[in-house]
Length: 245
Image (cartoon, rainbow, N blue to C red; front, top):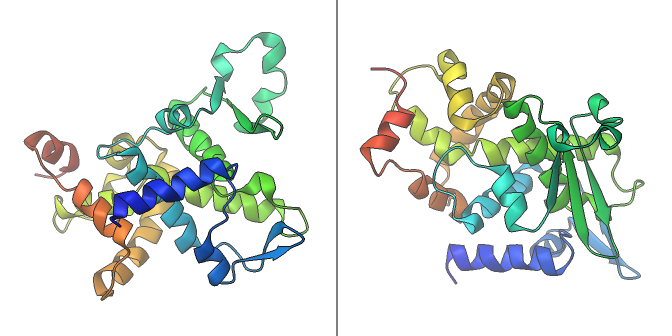
């Protein structure tokens, strides 16, 4: 079965099982356990698994250009997104104190995501963060199994991997030669449509990921696939990726 087919069935399974992160792979690895029909964590959901979830989603959606749009992903999965700028005053009450919140209706298996879209770049990350809560199954995790702080950190990691995929960053790095990407945070922010702060965090982890990826004898199939997908195939994309002359 090809990479895309495996991804398709993985994500189809997420939808059928109410977005729960239940898979034979995770059971075999001891990340989940079953007790009286309830799935619970036995270990922290490692960043490598979060990254794979985000990359599987990118591949499933057929995304091959930047920036990655979390709004299109939410629409494709049937999630309702309500923007602060389009809410009534009554609906806006309380929204000014938070960037976003997701309401899950278990009876209808539906998600409504409220986003403070005052700042577009920040709202992209906020929506990706809320998608992280959904795709990582946080609405089905009991509080004694994982605390809120851990879930927030995981959702942030998911958002970074989704909006700033390292295979795409690899191609940007390639087309800027020996240039230090840290010198181009503003350009990277525009390219990936996230804040410069998000870029700063991503660059730190990207360097570590790149070292492991380059040395690995066996590379993750989805990462290899996305590296091909984001490879420059046109002059327009090369211009988009190249920052220095």
